[in-house]
Length: 156
Image (cartoon, rainbow, N blue to C red; front, side, top):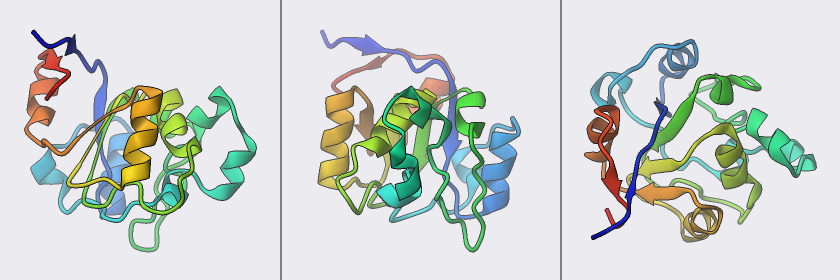
């Protein structure tokens, strides 16, 4: 029997439309369908811009996604992800591309993110998540199960 894990928190969709991201940060929950197209090629520079890496401790939890570009907009503000109570991030393909910056998954962890769901992940980012205890999955079916409060087998 596989170990079970629960993700107690909200789901943040990194949508291409900055208004969708802003609405979620203000407290509105959206669905995968209503989020519209998800951001693709989200780089570690978008997860943690270089200047954030001056921080090396839990302070990083105030800064995930500050470099996230949705068109010409940067919809995420300092502290908003952590304050939003998110436990899951959802994005498109090639999540975590770019540098092997360990600060990116660590910032997500410190903000409360425990699972990232994306179409695909860059290898080093995924390995860094595993090292820090953040789960990764390409199974979008997990979203509804998590929202229902279901315990998820770790091997899924």
